[in-house]
Length: 270
Ligand code: ADP
Image (cartoon, rainbow, N blue to C red):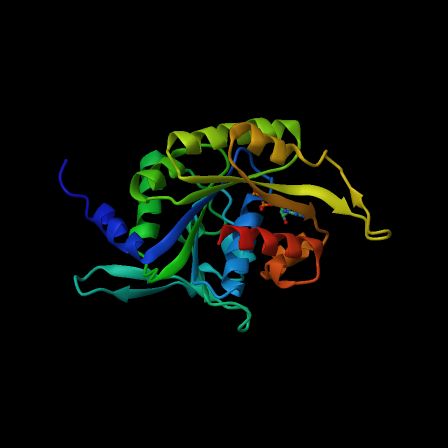
């Protein structure tokens, strides 16, 4: 089979990443990227050094949510002649430690449809792990595409994951797929598996009461049934879209219900 220098580099680099956390979901649109970005930002707000890798080539939003773009990626020549990418960073005017961001989206044109096949996706992910100057990190957070595809296999084969955070909404259909994601993580022997319930409830802007739109509590029940951790629930927040368009994670808004929920969940993670 011969040596795989890229795999070797990933092995070396991850020695400098203390906790490697996968964020995944059974299905799309449940707020997986929102959770990944806000947990990363919450941890950076607490002073930890955080890197986030957006491994979702079909819907790369992480960079935009964190206010960085492809044009911010620099390259540096290494001693052996190779080039490594330097991840763009954002510290939100000093509110956090600089969060390092790399994205599959940086490897493709913005308006190009992505028609990559398995082997190319695998190679791209390995490069984003092994050909990037990540440096010393307390947390390396990897945001995966929804479902249980090649990207996860590639990472599990190359990176010793410490934890998997699985995002769900309370609806029955989402929970079914979430169960599958939990089981995949169990099979892959990820040592710590946790569920987060997003869009759990709405806080009425008029009376402040909780409105359970989809039946809050499904995520917790699922976690209990599967014997994994339940990290908490995040309300629907009317400011979430505004935050993501502005490139400022909602956890930095401070006073909104979702911001508080994200801080509490991040505190449980550390
Ligand atoms: P996924 O990564 O699972 O596909 P995203 O994180 O991209 O999902 O979120 C999908 C949409 O839902 C985005 O427009 C996002 O702003 C919105 N969203 C996510 N979480 C919340 C929330 N707690 N409250 C309100 N909107 C949310």
